[in-house]
Structure formats: structure tokens, C-alpha cells
Image 1 (cartoon, one colour):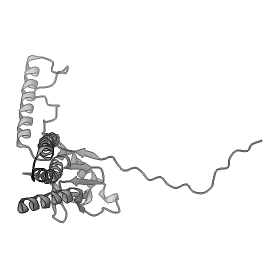
Image 2 (cartoon, rainbow, N blue to C red):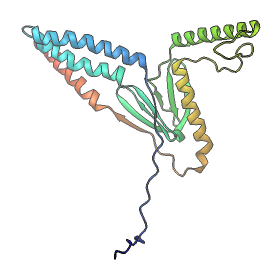
Image 3 (cartoon, rainbow, N blue to C red):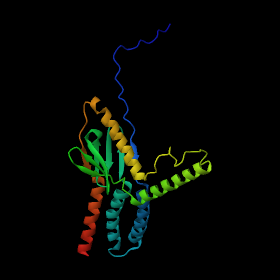
Image 4 (cartoon, helix red, strand yellow):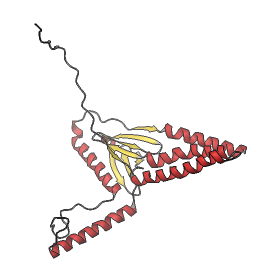
Length: 230
């Protein structure tokens, strides 16, 4: 006759609560441009390495070692990761982690920036300010408003819904970068409301991206040596 297994009376280790999932913001235009530039540089550089004569293959190799990390750094790499606790800014050559409790303001002028309580300023490369995007958003909003007024005045149905004049219930059309900054400001405002319940805020950390800097520097040194010796 078998007896049921006895449950251990020892306290079970507590399972840490998972961190909130990051919201990721990147520039689709920069990624598309990076793909195009890598294709052009790779095609020309590999062709010069394979078919070149004399010093040409070595110069082409040095240019590839220099150019590829820089293209990746300025197109694919920039991103902003944000959750309820902090914002992590991945710029071409640095990674900056700023807890929301250390953020003084999120500013949008000629560029989108995070400014800390100590006055340090970090640019958000992944969220560039696009005047063209703002103009396009303004034109779309104007067309939507005009269409809403026409639909309300003529009694027509727009998109299956009959709205009031001026499409009063719809949100204003915003450029992609401005929408992302609105999301970040909402996270900052939510943290300010809950800040009194937190014991620790954390410190700002800045790390250099040596995985990008090192190959780019190596390529620049090799290219300089080849040009000087040649």
C-alpha cells in the first residue's frame, strides 16, 4: 500500500515578479537607409577586394572595416527601450540607462532629448525630429477634418460612422516621432504619480559601445597606414 508523498514544510523560494516588457522605438527610415547603404558598400567593396590589383584590395578591405560598423551604428543601432521603471537609450556609440526618477524633462526642439535632474542631456537618435513628417501629419489632419465637416454637413457616412462636424471625437494626427515622445511622457507622468511608493530610484549609467568603436578605429588606422605608406 502506497502512502501519499508528504509536502515539505520548508519555505519555498519566492519567484521574482517579471519586469514590465520594454516598448521599443526605432526609425524605420533609418533602417531602410542602412540596408541600402550596406548593399552598395558591400557590393563595391567586395568587388574591389576580389578583382582589385596592387593595394586596391587592402584599401577596399580597410574601407569596409571602417564603413560597415559606422553604417550599422547610425542606422540599425539607434533605439529607445522604455518600460515602467526606466528608459534605455541606445545611441550610435553609447548606451544610456536613465530611471524615470532621474528624468527632469523630455524635450523636443531641433532634436528629441532626455534631460536628467543633474542637467545632463542625451539625444534620442532613434527618434529624430522630422519637420516633413509633421507637415504630412498636419495635411492628413486637415484633410480628415475637412472630410468630417463635409460628411456631417451632407449627412454622409464616413468609414461606417456618422461623426459630428470637425470629427470632434478623433485624436489629432501626429508624426511618428511625436507619437513616440507622447508615449514616453505618459510613462514619465505615471512614474511621477507612483514615485512616493518607491524606496530606490537608481542611478544614471552610461556605457560606451566598444563593439562598434573598436572595429571602426581599427579600420581607420589600417586605412591611414595604407594611404601613408602607399
